[in-house]
Image (cartoon, rainbow over all chains, first blue to last red; front, side, top):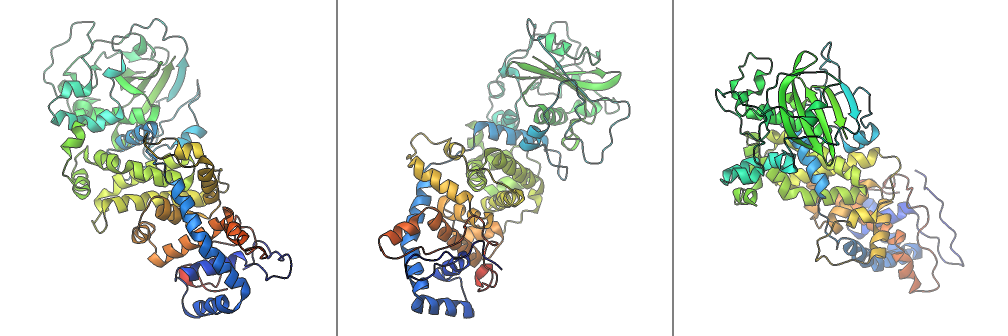
Length: 315
Length: 219
């Protein structure tokens, strides 16, 4: 093996400096990690060769200084920033049902391929090998200015389910202070609610069942006017229903978590509806002043998949 | 806070078992307990905030999904660190050109009462560490900055303890040159010239071929 640079001639008449390879050997020897003939050879060099003797002496003097420098650099404790913690928690929530599934989109991947207005936006969490459903169009659009004057019936971050709350929900519930832990009051419905046949939802995500057949150009309506909340609606779903799998709280939560992991923000609302004629759950998310409406299909939440049909961002 | 109380007295291994058994909150508590140290390891070994975030996320997802394979042969924290360290090592190896470490990122979030290190010194140290091969930088950070024992680092990296000692010794020696400590040492003995030659940032591999030690045999 060749050195990256030749030894520099020493000014004056002194010995040639050690090469980097020799320095590695000396470092190994100094901590007793050189064995056999190599150890004996270096020992002999250190005892008899002025180059090696001087280098060893210098290294012994320098080592404490290096350690001091490293310890000084370590004096500042590092805690995981909140945004990183949130992001990782969201990713974990998105992977709740995903043992063996593909990796979630990383930050660097997201940086490389941000959603583009008007462009198709495939779900990043579709299980590997799962083909797109024929006839389903994944769409992404941005509607500017719609937010102005919106009459949201569900407002405020307190309504939202964020990923950390998801993880902490059970803990808080166990403490017996569920309503405070979840931090929201149920939104006021705008129309009489149908009677619920049972209530298997914990009400964490306000749910409606408008049955609206959303289209690409009407999706943003959910950000403007939310349909009436229907507590207990999920309990009325049957396994044979197109969205019957969402009768359980867990399944809706897993789906919501996958949507959050993909789009960010917090879930404000879910509407059991249709998208271009197909059964769909339409989520309303909020991040800062931006709302996002995402329509997902019946496979949302399976192995962390979003099963996104369309999404529209509303500024 | 209630959540933390909920898990008081439950050790990491039991939390992991609960996670495998279907408890949806248990792994979150494991993450909560260890995330700061895992983050520090990733940030300080990769020197890039986004890379570190990706590495930790990737590692924790892997741990989340493979928790059923944890056999309890090491502590949960060692297991988690091993996964994170390997994710960092993979990323460091894949990276062709590493960005200069950002001191602002490395030291941005501090505990209020933390002792302020000399910023110039810290910057020099991080920049010097950034020039070391990943195989030396990672164990050195774990040993000298994060304070792990050699045996723990060996378990994390899946190498012999001697290999860890060797890599750390080589890393310290190179840092001594990069930080100018060797020069300073020699300055106290005027009349001698440079002790080491070559470019430490572009060594011919991690170690010399033919050198024995844990890294390879003698020249």
